[in-house]
Image 1 (spheres, rainbow, N blue to C red):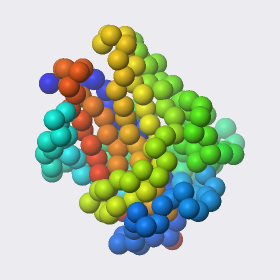
Image 2: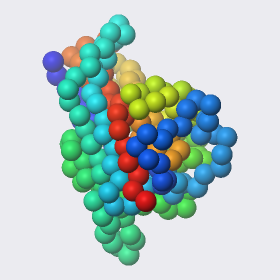
Image 3: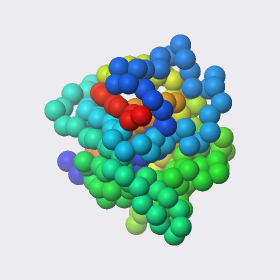
Length: 213
């Protein structure tokens, strides 16, 4: 089975002081409180998130695998005069095993200035990744959609990727990156399949996290 793309973007987390067993439920939707964008990026060293892999098929069947991804805040660094959090990933992402992120006005950005997340702009495309046979356009979508993962049930913001491919008749597939106030990324996915019309998905769901105080 052929993989089309690496896993979707792995960062944009919340600043908070939650313990491992603290969760926000669907009784506390993220849209009921006003947040600054920096609230969506915990930068304290020692914060971490652990995700388990689920193989989700087009017919709705899913397989729980013993494959895990993890992200932790390893420190910070200065790039072009700005301070960025260093996020260490256990799996390969679009930005290798290490990524850099900071808050800038109403956006989270990486060291290249790419807009990675917003809590106020649900209209514009925030980032476009161009490929040899198409492109992925990322924008904010699905505010307060309910997501269930092993760690709990949450109301989320979705940093959503729209994959347009000329190689498959100009069709579109989606990448989902769900974030929660005071926790961070709780679920993300990437599709893979040799069949564009009936793709399977690799989905990673939050099983444990810690925000260092």
